[in-house]
Length: 211
Image 1 (tube, rainbow, N blue to C red):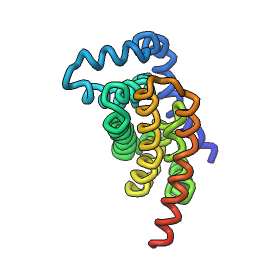
Image 2: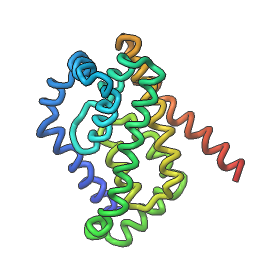
Image 3: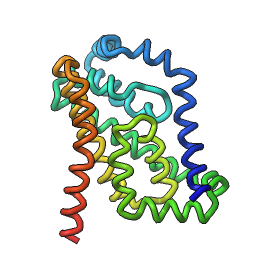
C-alpha cells in the first residue's frame, strides 16, 4: 500500500507542477469574461475549442469550470451541459487509455507488482467506482484518479460508467451557472458535490439488482 501511495503522489505532482508553473498566467488569461470573449471570437467553432480546452486540462492548468460556465453562457444550459460533459468525459477516457497503454512499466518501477495488484483490487472493487465518480468535482484528483484507474487496469465499462456519473452532473451544473450569469457559484459547488454520490449509489443498486 505504501508503494501504491507513492505512485499516487508522483501522479499528483505531475498534475500539480503545471499549476505551479503556469497556474497564475492561466487564471489571468482565462477569467470568465475573457474566456467567453475568446470562445465567441471562434465563431461557429467555439464549441469545439471549448471542448478542446476541457480535454487539454489533462496536461495544462485550464480552469475547467470556467470553460463549462462559458459554454453554458454561449449555448445555453442544455447544449452547454452536453458539451461540457462530453469534454470532461473525453479527458478522463484519454487519461485512462494513455496510462493503461503506456504507463505500466513506469508504474511497476514505482509501485512494484504487489503495489499494482493492490491498486487493481482497489479499483476493480466497489471502491473504484466511487473514487472515479467523486473525484470529478475535486481539484487535481480527476486526472490522478483516471490515471490510477488506467494503471490498475480497472474494467473500462465500470470506469466509463463512474466517469459519466461524475462528469455529467458537473458539466450541466456549471453550464447552468454560466447560463444564469454565474450568480450562484455556491449552488454549483453544492450540486456538483451532492449529485455524483447520489447518482452513483442509484446506479450501483440498479446494476447489482440487474446482475
